[in-house]
Image (cartoon, rainbow, N blue to C red):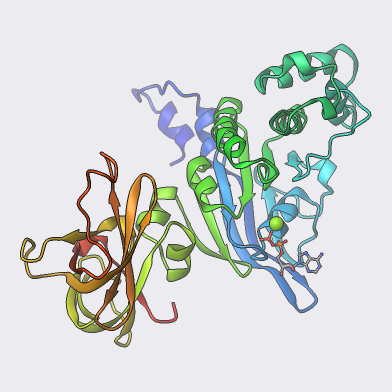
Length: 388
Ligand code: ADP
Ligand code: MG
């Protein structure tokens, strides 16, 4: 039974949300099926299946060359897939040119025309769609209002700051009210401080506009801050797809654990397993993991531990389990905290982060050369198969 029938049934509670809106949100706005792009023998994107929900802020994340831009450009129609299909709101648009898709792209270099005013730059997008005159003026003003730059309508791009140019490029991209806005590294040209500010602004604008955003970035912290959902890409494929929390708390592979946040990797040997409870040996110590993948093959494994989830404890203060013993090599001051690097019995290194709420001067911490005990919690350890 569809949502429609449910609502029409006699006596059914009438939902406050219009059925059309529920239907629109349930249906993927973009659907990619088996999409591929091969450049001769070079694989750009390889058999990607992906559904993007209406109103979602989705980020394609991964290192340079993993296929993010190629995937985005195929959604926009700037690149022809060598296989697979692209659907927009249920319609096959694989063969349509960019201007016939209800999708708009904001380019990395903003591509503003230097000889045109801000207003003319934004109106240009409408002209291409045959909208001109008063109707165009109203929409240009509305787009500028949304990005908070109404007063810049008569200025030239060179009179604006980097952050303002970025917002003008956004205004030009949204003035046509596309169903989907594609953004390829939209903040990469800005300096660190402004980039952080624009991350939050852009996210708020997306929420206000209600337009689906698909953004490309190689910056994991940017992806965590801005996205409803992140698709991590690896060599033309999807490595993992989930909310920022899913990816940080439950990375599917060492690749994801390494790309998002910081992870210590230590080699481990499987001693026993019962369901999701596994006991492994790490640097000569027994370590229990409570949410291990079931049916591990072979006994050569890797554990992953976030530095902030491992703690240096006083010897004898913790129960005898899940402890690693070692000698401190160095301390690294991080401002918010202190990272201590400890060498374990087998020579491997593990970093532990300690918050410094009252500053470093009043904090008693282990010094290089000290023998320390590191405590790991069974539910805060990732376990991966070697080569996964
Ligand atoms: P990303 O945006 O993640 O950095 P791209 O999508 O730009 O990666 O590129 C993915 C792969 O496809 C890379 O190996 C790249 O060299 C290759 N590639 C991209 N565009 C072309 C092209 N026009 N011709 C040949 N190879 C390309
Ligand atoms: Mg790219």
